[in-house]
Length: 415
Ligand code: NAD
Image 1 (cartoon, helix red, strand yellow):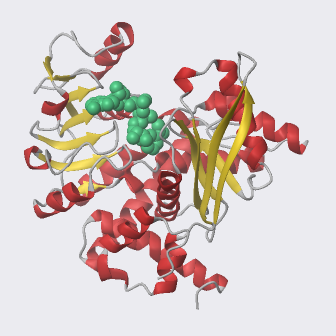
Image 2: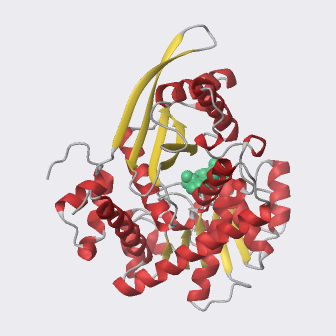
């Protein structure tokens, strides 16, 4: 097989779902080779007056189902293969949730913590100047990702509108509400994860009240999912951040935990809970373990110590492929990231729709639409898993790939 431009990780992921789809060589090529791949270097004047050259990437992986969509990350370790893999996963995520989008991802090799606010703004604007001919509301729509936020989206939008001379709020999502952003974007990933979990528990005939939950990671996603579940009478028994975990087998009062974390800037010393290590939190006996921190948290080294009935992946790729196989053997269901954390991209889509109408929905309206998208996708997953007798990760890949290939056939790309 011709290996030029192939995404190696994507190729491996397709191989892992084995022969279920019986893909031919052309289909594998279509699915593993990004349609457009940009690598570029651009100059930025730093605060000391010197010029620094930054490296940027944008991958538009597959646009069969619509304009490509995906975030932009600023991180010192950003590299082309990583961006290709993430763009592939975005393609699958949009297909799984039935959004009329393809997948993309972008990034800049930089450490935002080591540059000033002014330098960050100049990097963000320069990134858009390099790409503006190839991205836009009907072509490829960026969004926030690791180390990028609504302010950076606002600078990028402003640069794009200055260059093109037009208002084009749909150029980018994850913007501040005052600049065309959507209601509930900040809690969308956690809210989406909650809807998926609720539906899966229903499918498994498990009552949600009193369900014992452990949450690893207490940032935007982890804190919000803990709050949402606590408000709905799930029993959140442990949470952790990068330093510690806290545990109370009778349940934590998450509202108080959040107040404490905001005041003390740490979870430690929270009363009526015992401190535990980051290693121990993954080993607590519970009904649902929610991974909302980083990638590669459950590995072949610690997977045997996991004592949960199921796992919800809100972080991207928190379980290594080797550990995933062992969990499947132990019959511990994993609700995979490409569905569990897709609430963010669903609300991004809703933001783009509102921008194109120039008419804005209330919080309740956006929440209701998010619920519809997430429950429909979860229902479809149940059917695919039954049809193919497979675990959820394979079911999601199979369903997304079938949808993408179907559209490629309609377009005449595949015969
Ligand atoms: P964040 O930076 O706000 O929070 C991350 C949290 O993880 C922090 O509380 C940090 O202290 C904690 N953490 C780091 N290392 C840890 C460890 N070893 N053990 C326990 N906790 C640890 O990030 P976020 O926006 O909440 O994102 C979390 C994950 O979800 C990331 O993998 C991200 O890619 C993914 N995700 C986020 C969104 C979104 O909308 N924010 C969307 C999709 C996926």
